[in-house]
Image 1: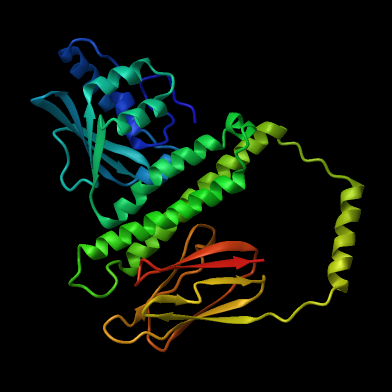
Image 2: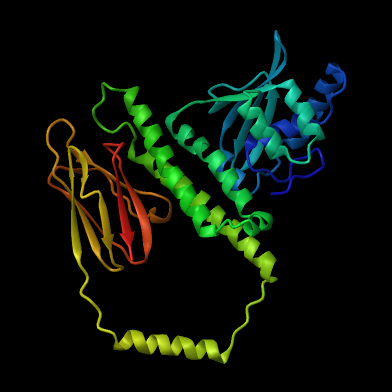
Length: 347
């Protein structure tokens, strides 16, 4: 990911980088610093937030608390809409989705650094940048930030030479994403123990699924861009390749195709039974809700590459069925008993 040397932000990974680069335009006397900041704030209004950052931060409200000294801070309110910076004002905004707190000395490091992400990471580790995320969905969404940044960095050519395999990168992100979703839903439910039903509505779950899909597509695009850079977008065909394809087709036609199977997974008071399956392409899984008592509902949530595998809420005695049409590894989250997951390997 490349950052512009100009004061206008043209490429970003996370919104904190945008904001800190804004603020680091000039670190002279405090009054001159404030003048420069206010000038650049106006220039940024209307700017597009490109790429993955637009997905994560395209419709939000932020308050950035810039700490000048022990007793003084300035609050900047940022509103984004449709992947654009709609407005920036001094004094903050009401009902923000995130509050960020930044030490002034971080700005000096950003101003002099050629690697803003390293500065951000160090500042986060040293608690010179802290943040408070407000709302369940936002907690899940912003949980993607560090994972996404790490994954994008690993897609660079330099890192590929060090042995970072694209599929391993995406699988690692997928696994950690599942953990984030489980942790945040569990935390939300623990804070609302009076409600024995799922804390998350169907709308909230759909928002999480859509976000995962968008982020995953961005990773695929990052991988594709690197491959195009390495190959010069050249695709070479040959008669030998066509002959090989014909041979494979002939073999497939001659093979005896096994009958597709149906697997039953019971959703009981303990979660999934069984909680691990190895199946073949074309096989079907039926999730059967056998729960009773106060918690008698079920929701199936597929994650990352299995985003299409999702159900609404289904009651005790009802089923949800899915036929898997491609090889994959799926983690299925139980939307009601959120600490429970199921692993399905499709061969």
